[in-house]
Figure 1 (tube, helix red, strand yellow):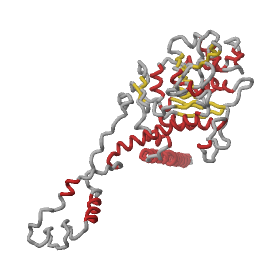
Figure 2: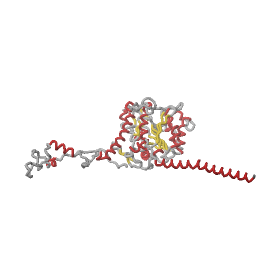
Figure 3: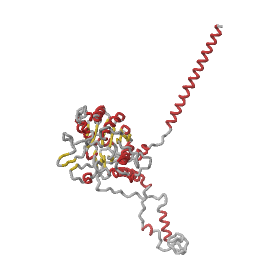
Figure 4: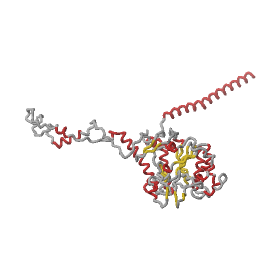
Length: 450
């Protein structure tokens, strides 16, 4: 009896082992095989190109190298890079370009409304102004592979809406190497020029926490209205660069909490008073030794590069003095927002025209046919005016007495000319080399930017 029970338990144990092993094979073997097949097929499958892929490829021929020592714009004006080249490679998705606004562009003829945007009737105010900004800023981000966000922020109680900026920066900076914000009335003038090249020009280093442009200076009754309480020109927050550093995080925290008066007594004055967070930054943050311990900690950008537009002072025609900033790279239309639309259109059409020009020149003979000049000497040689030496009773040597001199079986001169014209455009005929393209002598030459 005991032996029988032993054999029974032994058989049951063997059965359970076999079942368990079979279960293991079924449960783990098959998914592993499936995973390998999926991974293999996934490696060989090519994904459809995204909008970013398409735009990056489209503008590749004109994109400026971050290491370029100079940049020449379409008017022939040459801008030099900085004395030190810190940024040599594209940063791509390590950079975020963000539009921060309390105005949500979902209304009539606005960028996030599903109805087709009517650019021609776009008005430069409210959500339509934001829409124009998104077109320019989003395209710029796509051309250079940067990340882009439209951040629709909520108003902060008892604060002007511009105070949202330091709060949003503080929230976003941990996820990127750089966060760059532009106001809705700021346009990137030269879409082919990357931020990395501009960083080099402006002296932004790996130790720089923030960079902002000098504001335009307004002088009324011989008194400047654009300086802080220490007499120093304020910095403009219409274009702000922040680099992800421990110091930057602390700076942004201090800036966003400035109006609590805890660290900076008196800062609450700027909750609603012009120029809000901009003036608070210039009054308190930039003077704090914890954040501005070195010349490259907070970098001021030339007003000529990032405020105003070409013809700024002339267009305004003010009855008081104002500095004439040209907005060489960033056009900030502070006092004439209606110019944002044409500025955006010009920036897009300029790079598109450059891309098409580059393609046409590269295509060369395939798309450019130059009709050759008529050669009268060769045409005259086709006619035999020396008489008939063939003894066949006609002047052509073709046995034809039709009285024509062409040797063409009696075709008229007009018909023969038509045939000659047809031959001039037959496939295979060598096309003459294009004539030399003359350069405008009024434009300065510049190094070729690869």
